[in-house]
Length: 257
Image (cartoon, rainbow, N blue to C red; front, top):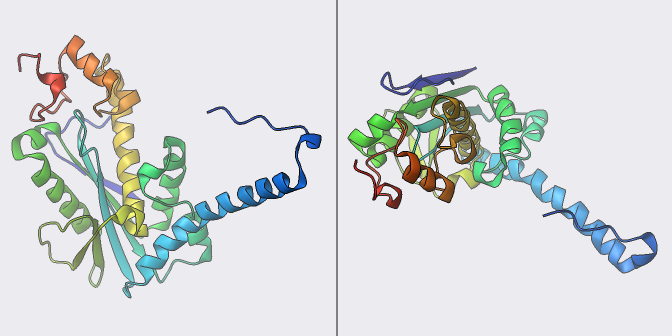
């Protein structure tokens, strides 16, 4: 089960074309062998990703591993969402690891792949928590402080005695449990990668629903990031209640904020 924690002040969570295949008589045996070999290699690399990440977590020598990551840190609009995932690495068998063989940093997956991984992470993890921090919180406290506090609160929600808490990139404020920052953690640790999937999917779902509440800015397509289309919409329409006014963006320069 996923537990969601959010600010009381937060906005309501309305929670290249393939290459042509040559005719058989156009493929020489050497080309066919190379093509077959390459085709076999590509899936194996993808299958090994999750296994490598779980091997890292198991190598830490602790039964309970918690990982945290956030989504929406660099957005012009929308909340910051942090997630934490707790794995009992001793209880994970071959079937569970095989189900997450494609697990990786959420940025390495397209939306469909993330959506497919999300329920598998929730089903496999011992505990999952999602923390949302509103635009008003980000503007009043600052992005970095808000981010650290959200990651800490997410980890505190899943941590248990004896667990090791892993954070992508940097340590969070002390919260009574052992923690370790991991550089490129979402591409190194299964727990952090799983948290990155949960955070990204959860935030994207919020922004897709927000698109209906705040039409015109096309939140469904760019989910709040500073794309040319998003900046153009701000120039035409101004800002919505979901925009972070504390950000120094060129998209705001012509507006009377």
